[in-house]
Amino acid sequence: MNPVPHIRIIGDSLTPGGYQQYASFRRIDNFINNSGSIVAITDDLSLLAPNTIIVDKFYPEQHAEIIIHPNSIILNNNVYHIEPSNIYDSGFGWPNINFVQFKNTVLNFIQLHSGTFPKQSLLSLLIPAKDIYPSAFDKAAFTAFEHAFSLLHVRFFDSISAFRGKGRGLTPSGDDFIAGLLYGIHCLESLTKMNYRAIKVPVYETAAGSNLFSNNMLQFAKDAKYYKRLKDFLIALVRDKPETTHTAFRQLISVGDTSGADLIAGFFALILQKPLIFE
Image 1 (cartoon, rainbow, N blue to C red):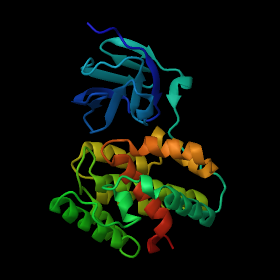
Image 2 (image 1 turned 180 degrees about the vertical axis):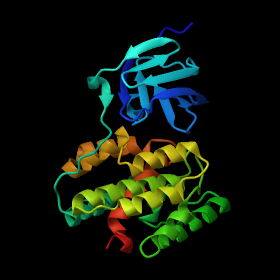
Image 3 (image 1 turned 30 degrees about the horizontal axis):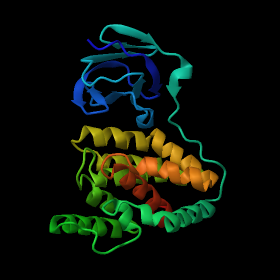
Image 4 (image 1 turned 135 degrees about the horizontal axis):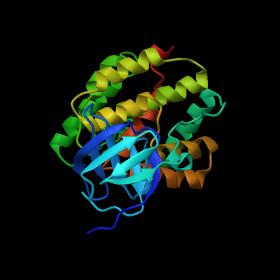
């Protein structure tokens, strides 16, 4: 029998209630409640997210059920009391910087680091390249993404619909990209002192579908709750610390097959294009 793990830190967006095991992977178990909210357990701190429980030792499928209360968590009848100091703050407070200045920071980053972009990720939309497709299927899929991307500036919601659910992966590339757009909208709101809730909510409603992993990710992006790897990268990018930024970027794009890269591609696209709907 595996020893009882100790909870190290938890995300700040764990909805109270009971959760049953939903999907298990090599480094993480996912649990779901009746409304489709997901909670994950892992011992990998780099996977910390608004809905993650970090334990000291992870054993796949060790827990059949999680019960979350406002001040405690029950794992297999073991009660863990939650201290405020053990809660990850998924919020991101954008500094008081000029939007044009930050846009130039993004442009400079892309120019310096485009050589490290995963070639089959949606970051390629920002630096179009030829002969990156290993098969005709992949080329056709990317052509569809190029079409969706071409709509972004003028036909924003048509672009969202065209990205929705497209691509491979636990969260399809198109959904990752839309989540990145939502984080980009939060950045735009903060830097321009505008309120774009009337845009963010329809984006989420347009993008949400039957994929529960995507829906949870999109919900967090709409509510400006950041995954640790994304938050670490953006903090480094804003502070303009080249070595730290490079390391944080490598960590971010290592998520999934191309999920981290597709997520930041959406963020960059929103900042660089600033679609007409935001004017």
